[in-house]
Length: 131
Image 1: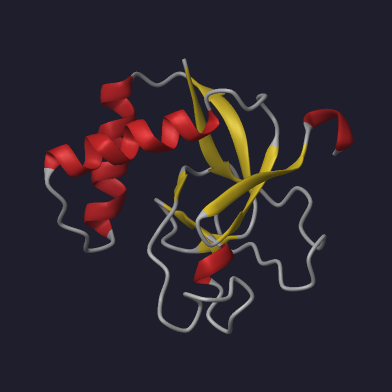
Image 2: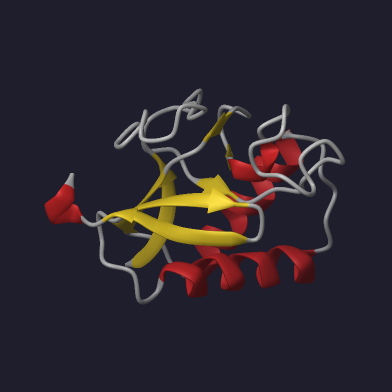
């Protein structure tokens, strides 16, 4: 079992510019930020505050910590496959590093917590008891 980030509609609307276009429960990653949002997570694009869906190729401003029946190898393959589908051609070492970094980000966060992103900061928006 691994704690991973998945898309969620929970707590949508807390911020007026929230959005949720992902498939509920799909794995998400933290993508690059475009020039329009680089200095402001509330910029016009929205990528500075979003998590990218690995299956839907859509995005959401909220992600939930889920304990899933994945091994590290499973997670690396899920990232590789999802990113490859989106046109990202990353080296295996880069994908493994990304998997480890994303898993470490949520390792100490309680399962069910909802997170939000503000550029390079990913913070808890709500704990399970608050939802």
